[in-house]
Length: 239
Image (cartoon, rainbow, N blue to C red; front, top):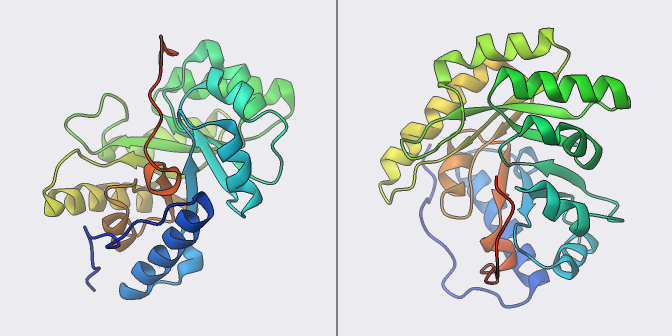
């Protein structure tokens, strides 16, 4: 099966609601082109650096999943927002485990035993059980994640510590070589087969078509949905 990958629409829609509708249509078309049911792929809106009003509007327009990289940004931006699952996709710092468990329904970026154990301890204490994903490293430029061939053993350790491990997340390589992107995503998909669960979180605004062709069940889109991120003034939270 072959997807029409690496191509976008000729003219980008302007409004937030139009962009969401357009992305959903493209997702559905790409799924059908590789013989997949469009309902098998969940759309995640990455809200990093986006204004709260746009996030609220996106959720009101039916976007059921939103994601943030930074705890501090999520604290103010997500307060009072109901009706959407909240995903943490940033690097898990153990000293922020309590805030992560309090704020998020899914923690996609577990890549160290100490981080997983910190999330597990806080989850037991708070009586919350967020789903978690093992972050695997499939890119030579990516700082975080474990090797794909270590994913199964790592997931077993996390489950033994009480985490609800539901699959794998990975960030694709930064390259225009579409074959390299596909090869990387296939490595993540093989790790997912060994880890088990229901979620393979692959694909961002530049490579989600390849991700769907490789079996992704969840794509994380920021710019494609919300447009270019506004400039950030001053400092930022350290990831």
